[in-house]
Length: 289
Length: 103
Image (cartoon, rainbow over all chains, first blue to last red; front, side, top):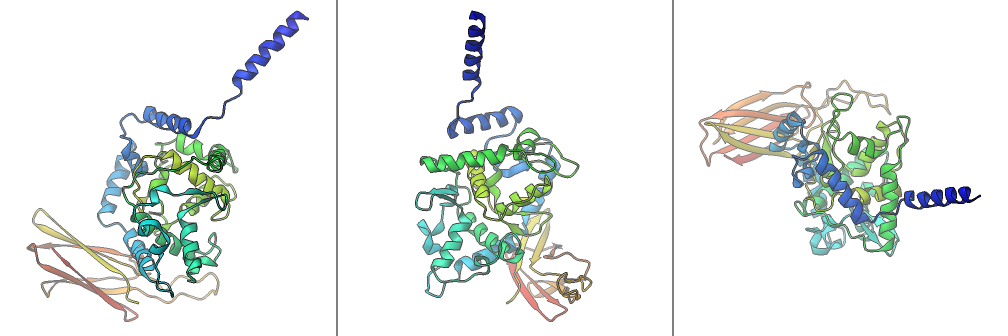
């Protein structure tokens, strides 16, 4: 009897120890950074903002990327976005009137937690609301952004211009509100959860396999610095796209059913990913493979 | 609406590289619209010409084989700083635009 009690006590103790304490976001961040520091000791921290091109072994991709950057093709889309941003609404105001500081140097705080709506707000959502509140009717307000390519690209170009106004600003996400932490935890769950027929989590490719060439011609980027470049233009798309569309295609690549553009799971994931890239300078828009 | 035409120059080793980026669909006329099952009419840039200080220095004949939003570059010899490079393009539908840059 005594023995059984002892055994139970030991089991109980072991159980208590193995129950993982919920790590705070700051601890997560440190662990995340340390992981990549150990994995790629030669890569400087700021260089992670350049995505996969910073990683060792991708020198050829880097050379190609540098050549693209001499005259980046996203300039055309960015030009469209700037035009939309500068065009006044019917009431004479512009998109700049909806944002603090005229929209300059504020994108590093996006996405942010909004206590009023109890939701994470992305730059796309704010831009859409801005148009709605000012009585404008751009195509992306009513269209189904998951399917309507034209409307989505228009929104992406506008968002790209918004982000370009904050180029170089270092990401800092405010997670002081309990709701924000909750959304962060949700995003974290999405990031580490396996899905699809291939049964991959985001983390499998962009943490474990980061820096490897997957299936030939698919270099896998490191998760650190993921969001700094978005909205970005990818070589095989030939247009500026939103980060949610990237999440959708990523889900498709592991044979999972993509969620809707603007889904709450995606905004939470974006919050988690952006927080994990805290301290890195924004480079959006940028070219990506 | 005139299509966006952007231009950039870079001088290196005595030659000046002039790059032009045009926002253009470059339709071949072979593609079929999946919804209406009708062919999308051809729409592509036919001629692109570069002038240096008003004098024509290069002419490019483009066709349907060139990609969407084409980037065209030529290298010019003997261009000096302050020279004006101008590019003009026209397509098969009669649209055209131009851009100017200083070396």
